[in-house]
Length: 484
Image (cartoon, rainbow, N blue to C red; front, side, top):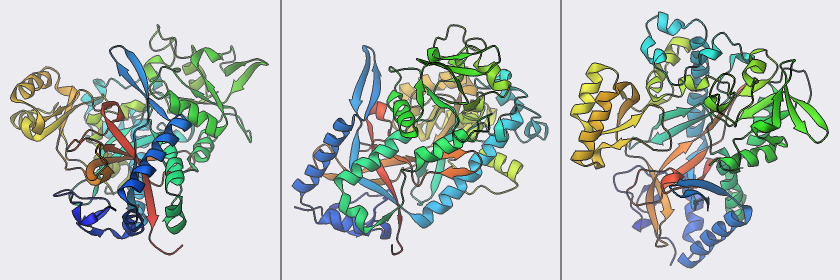
């Protein structure tokens, strides 16, 4: 029996594919028509083919447990998430605007701090920031760009609008899975790509290389670029190796690099030392250079900061960019856009209360059963309170943590994340909540991926989309509904 979309009902939630039971959205009509032609058995055969392709292609992610780390096959659902091109163009403009303002903010923080002097941003947030790096004060990176690669998390509410949930500016991950999701879908549903104008994503590695090359301190047609990884035990190692391979550049660990007396970076090779022009580092600031940060780090490169400050190597993302990767700073991004660009934000933030403010903190504490409370610098969904689903005891314990360290918390209302059809554990199609992480590259120009990584909560009713906590992913199609 084929999928009967009349039986598919997302209830109160905005659904990405279905406008009402039995009715697909315009951009999803072709897909829904073809899915309707498949029997349950044929649909599950396609799902099994996708799972086999993921195993054969070696697409994995790492989960850390008390007993160590485990590599698992990437969890993937074959029913894609679809966004109309016209709608995406507005979203893309909002992301460009946002990243431009964030880069201007970071530049300002390490120089004149005008936004603070003008009373538009609290000085206390910088003075208490875990990610502000005094070592970066006065540095002038190429093009005054600090966050070269940004992954902004978007959610869609019941009103159908996209909201920015957070910005990831230190070492954002997930783009390799966006690319591999598309490869898998082309294997599983080749016929759909023949009959729809689905915008491509496979030019990202070339765009990434061009952006990195633009940072080279030497005028060369093909500068030497390296991806710096913490090593095989890092949860994102698959992505580090994948991107290096796709760009045709070297994948290195800290021990493979050295800084010479001329304050240039060199790579150790079997033929001797080769100068490196640009390092795409996937290591946190704290471990990047033991001379200036954690002296016990064996992951980084001694002297790397000296070489960067001397202008002899490009680093992406720049050290110190994480000053804007803070959930309290996130609350002020709309104000940054108005201050630096003299524009209204194209994309809205989720309404946010900062607990460092006395009045806002008391409001949050009085309404913990209505809020999602997040720590300022954690990621992956760790350390937060889902107030509407928490017990009274859990809320009381969390209230104590907020009072103890109010600088560390923000609160947001629980947004009813949009849904999209997903094959559940019983082989049936059911609505599941999704978010979206597009990737934005900032160099000579600002480039936004056509779509991004859609993460899906595979458990019924769950809002947790992180793969480390049971979530999965989908291919994201930006569909031009005009004729090809």
